[in-house]
Length: 193
Image (cartoon, rainbow, N blue to C red; front, side, top):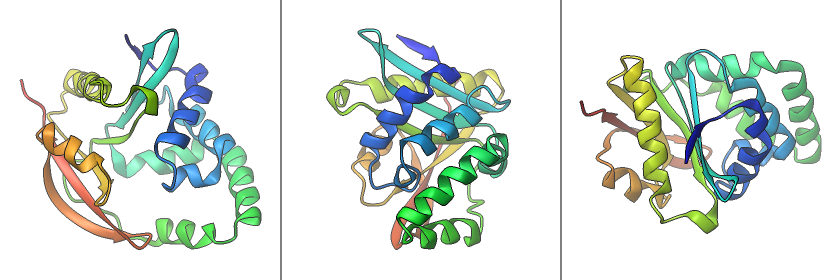
């Protein structure tokens, strides 16, 4: 069953994000940071979130936004003190993260493609390859469509298995860029009527 996310889901989705996307930028700051991040964005205007519930628990989720240019600054502002504190703690523990933080804030905007964006999608490893990701994408597309959004984008590491998933769902690559020493692809998709 697909359900809209609420702040009460923040702990569950943080765990899924941390495991399913380990090695990515946000999980490198730990579970408390991810939880505070999601508490700050869920329910905000222009942010869409859906969870897939199986056996009474969230097993996967998707978060998208109407305007990716405003999303991250809005997320940081909404829970600024807590996120800043958790970020500083992690930088003290893992000073090497400072390079990625600086690169993130100093990197020029990737304004390629539409403003609407699928920000993150993650599925519990025990529930992958069962069509759940596809259901989550459809839920997000339904929300986009309801708001008059007909085209959106996403960003993915070039070396991720997810590239095949997005190609299968008819996304088209519109550009690429280098960040954190890795190649990233920007894909876009038109939502069918």
